[in-house]
Amino acid sequence: MTISTRLDSYLSMLNITYQVVEHKHSASSFGSAIMAKIPLNQIAKAVILKDHEDRKLMAVLPATNKISISAINDNLMGSYKLLKEREVYQIFKDCDHGAIPPVGEAFNMQMVCDEMLDKLNYVYIEAGDHRRLLRLTHDDYQTLCANSKHLRFSSDLIH
Image (cartoon, rainbow, N blue to C red; front, side, top):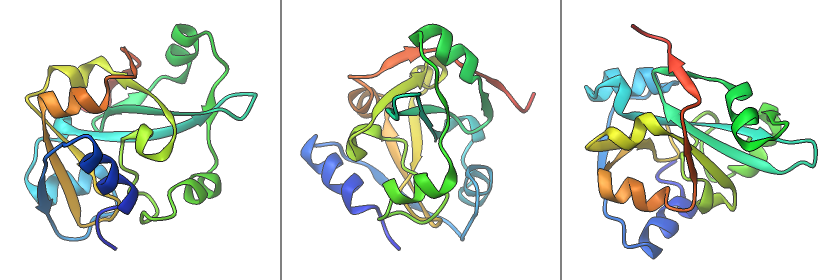
């Protein structure tokens, strides 16, 4: 597979330029960072949640961090929980399993972004396969997150 067609179309529509960073096949954000020789904290990952009314929410956080769903629920006054894998696969049909681009609006989904990513000069995102990352500038990443809430809802896994 290559770059997600929905992601590519969405980035084109917003006139967002990116650099493709190719790497050996990897099954995780950690592996992608190691293969591409990128600092782990610069890779954004997506976690898909849903609430009791089946509304989907994409939480975007650094790959080095662990999500706090309770922090999201407290901040948004919600009742979100993790979406089951099979449901995730149905939403991201043009992506390899486990290679979700952290760009909710490209997939008609609300997003919440961890504030830690706002401090980076460059953010790397999954392209939709296990062999490519997209390098975005700080400004382009901020454009992608312009309609999102920015909160602190994760904590470091690696010290």
